[in-house]
Image (tube, helix red, strand yellow):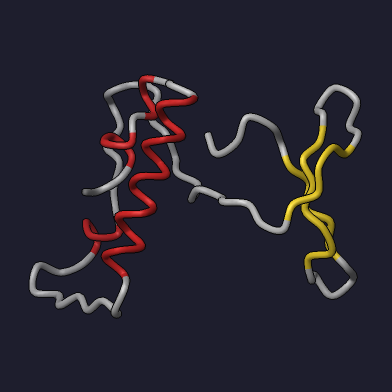
Length: 103
């Protein structure tokens, strides 16, 4: 859901990123080298209504206090906008952001 084309991350021996490149899945040939990519968090996706999706907050006690750092709300809003833009580009009904993420 993050990109129309797959990307390849080439690592050095110490797991340091050497390069990030988009590639053609049919030929496996590299296309464009980029400095960064956005990777959405992986989630288990139920394909029917028999499964409930849990969040981190479902595991926390009701009296839990949550602190945030300066700038977190702005970054969360930016993330939400990016997720919605990707969804609009690659519309898949069961992947609607409102079904996958807390607001």
